Image (cartoon, rainbow, N blue to C red; front, side, top):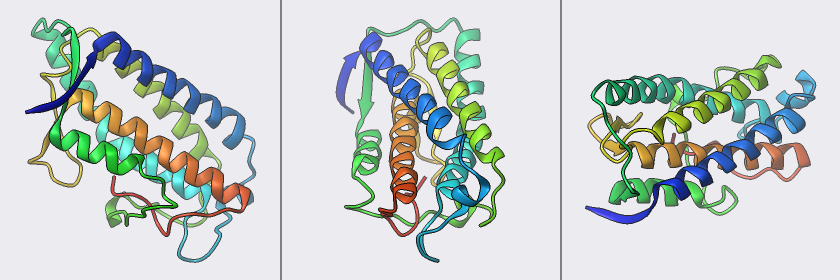
Length: 198
């Protein structure tokens, strides 16, 4: 049973604005960094800025193709946008958990979604920028179908199917959380032992 509903246009406008801010941050804050700056870790138990981005890239690599395929199927079925973007109970729980700052609540990322190394190349920033662009594209396409009716399997619990609206919002909030974590590392104010559950 849905717990919240927002006008579809307002919902997607907010997601788009949030993604545009993330895109600017990626371009201005992370792309100019040297490999050394990207890989500097505040402590052995904490991620570098590059590892935060790598985690987002791994999670995006799981979700973005799945979302693209399901939107395409909805388009082929002739799906039309709904007037409101609904939020489900579980979706709200996951999103609210991600909105809690890492300085307040940390999560341990499952190994398969953890960064692949400690000496990451600078291309990690380019991959992240491309994923933000792809998420912007998918958000635009999602406006044109009934995103409430599309279900996306959860990365950790595939039997849990979230509404596309919830999954898109979760991905954006997840990005915001880890970008804030990466910026804190660069500023010397590291928070969070690992990363959130993806």
